[in-house]
Image 1 (cartoon, one colour):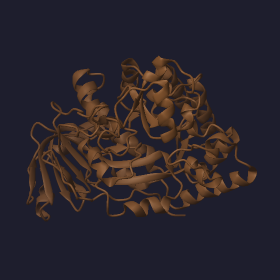
Image 2 (cartoon, rainbow, N blue to C red):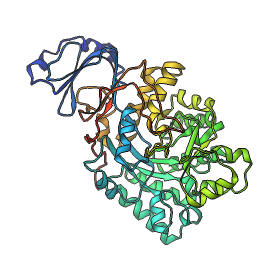
Image 3 (cartoon, rainbow, N blue to C red):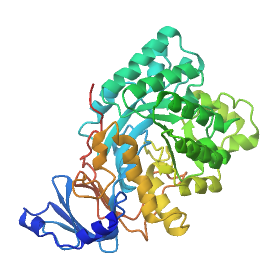
Image 4 (cartoon, rainbow, N blue to C red):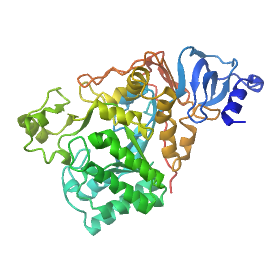
Length: 478
């Protein structure tokens, strides 16, 4: 008998044993429960106890508090592998978008202990971080950049002594429980292939995945977008390090379809490579970063693709040069809807926001609306992919990407007995993103309830400000 049929038959049985136990802390009644791992998709009731799912039943369950989820979807909380926020208040925007676990993995940080200590007891959702090659390189080379390299760490090869120090820093971060190793290779172009291979080898020794913004390719322009992808696939094949490629639609742009084909071929030949996308045509980065070193004499049309986040204005050469001296966030309107659709529809992509702190106009709508935009625009309206498939790419697959190094992730991204009670309840007919490039601080709509470790962070469509049930997601210390 097929396992899905067995699961469905078990769901049809009343849970007499559960009724003999103490009441559940919370019961979610009559929702459309979707579990991406087992494939279950049907009406059921969940019983939560002690921050975990304690029962999944076709019949009623007892508890002091009930949520009526009739007509709503009940799914695992979304797992965002790509977030750069430092202000816990901005994570409430993620929560309203359905995110219950968020990770700074693409860039990472140089000091893993400090990052976790700064967030302990302050976070509305679960959180984790990679040790960042770029950040460690900046510290060793005394780069003045605020977040990304803007000096020697971007523009100068490391000496043998510096490479030894960079290696020590990355190794220390992994020993202190970093989720993986982050690589902003587009922002450290002077780092040699040999240097990066040494970092991949360190990651491999610790069973860690490399999370990479590939070299060269970016929204700001590249001559050969496939080259950066081929580099990290080669490093992965040689060292055995799993590799996750950030925002394939932003890095690939018109070459996105070809690059997804390369990833599929690499996977077919045994390379452990995954990728992600976000559902917007504009990217965003720091204007003072290396990516814009070649932008001193572009056409007026190229400068007009840039939008200064603080004011919403499109740039000219004059304003570009002025703002580059100041430094700050710039939006890059360089992609197409066709590319976004290719990436969203691909079975290879996970969904991740590449978001960051939301402060009025200082932001990008992806920080507040990535997951709701996928569910509203591309699932409900365009029907590019099914709801269960979209949820798989938001929940189960991100959890699987992390759980080899962080076994606790095996309890996330699922709706099963014993799984963590990180749960979203949303209306599939009304969920949508509302943030725009000019107003990125608008909450998404349609998310009725979001629970993190069994506690409400969003309740009846309202953020529960000041509620901080988020816990650290961290690998074992070595």
